[in-house]
Image (cartoon, rainbow, N blue to C red):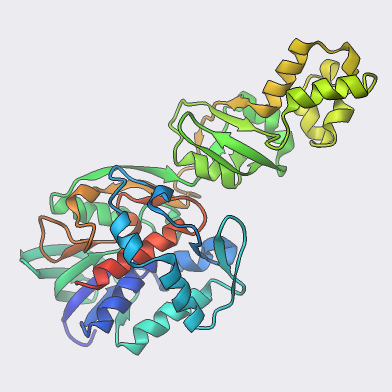
Amino acid sequence: MKNNTAEVVIIGAGAAGLMCAIEAGKRHRKVLVLDHANKAGKKILMSGGGRCNFTNYHVTADNFISHNPHFCKSALSRYTQWDFIDLVQQHHIPFHEKTLGQLFCDGASKEIVEMLLKECAKIGVEIQLNTHIETIEHKSDHHFKLHTTLGEIHCQSLVIASGGLSIPTMGASSFGYKIAEQFGIKVWPTRAGLVALTLHPEDKEKFSILSGISVDSVVSTETISFRENSLFTHRGLSGPAILQISSYWTPGEAITINLLPTVDLLSHLKSAQQQYPQRQLKTILADYLSKRFIEVFLEPRIAEKNLASLSYREFEGIAKTLNAWIIRPNGTEGYRTAEVTLGGVDCDAISSKTMEALAVKGLYFIGEVLDVAGWLGGYNFQWAWSSGWAAGQVV
């Protein structure tokens, strides 16, 4: 620390915090970023399998979950995915679209972190790592006093960019929620989102033989459906479709999985019965599903029957099993592996334009600490860039 004052202090050197620092620095504000980790952008570094799914071509407000669904619209419309893509291109970082508009670095996630740190360095943003915040005092409007392991720090604008509870091994904590509560701001109950689902013991035992098998699927709750791969694991279900539905799933609820989304199985079986009456059911299904899969989902006495000997009612049962498999998860893998935290700082207490707390002048909340959680596929990074940018215009 050069001295104990800064105009803007940002707590959290992640995606949102660094973006806010860059924008505030461009306005010639004296910016200090504090983080308890030993590296900036730790979650960026490990994201996307080390390639950072940094945004998505198809971002809209509909891709986010919040008690205030309109809150994210302003920031997302003012700093869009195209703006961030432009920044990536200015730094000559090669990238590609994987599926469904998801953009990944061709190289490694560290290129995105290096880009952000270069932008910070260019405008004189100071970043202090391995720093712990002990207490925060609100002296008056636009005056905060922080007691830290670096000593006392005074600032006019205080930005909380400390993230949510997902992946505690990366240093996630409830710090941001505690600060909100200290200032009388409501915090919605939190839970793990974009997370694998676990199964009840009897189901886990039955389906564990399929561990490692991934299938194209449509996974649904009563309110929403996602079509992507589902992955069977030794503990339950994972894969993109399952992670997406987990953010909408409530404990005790069943989910429906269409394991053959391109096939109307009832019609297909009726047609096959006319053409190949002597073929075994398992032979017909082998065009679409592995032998192991058929053995787990259908009893041998049914699978080994020839089509001529199966009744329409049996066809209906088989079709329902595979086109509309109903399973009741036991729970989730929790924050340990979750990609996002649902719930958080109440958006009704925050300005959607500036990210400032309505009741506390100079206090801002950005990124995952807010009650805004995106879908899988780069949406949460875009929320970090957009909300960080919005705050950076005014802090």
